[in-house]
Image 1 (spheres, one colour):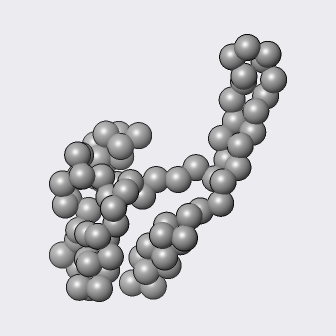
Image 2 (cartoon, one colour):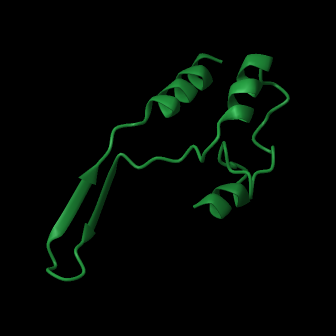
Image 3 (cartoon, rainbow, N blue to C red):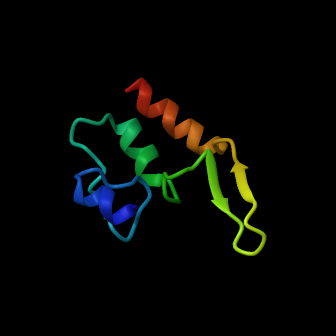
Length: 80
């Protein structure tokens, strides 16, 4: 996912290996640049994942709410 997003010109925030700062736009405010630059993990989240269990073939559906740091990042980006 990370490499494919980069190839489309949309590097992931927090991806130190592939994006290397390419997700910091010149048009961003200093506040946004600071928050984006200090985000210490990949800004990548799946709210729901479904897959078939490899042994019993039951369909598994896992859900996870967005973490608080992700929500804060999302809020800052939507505001600016």
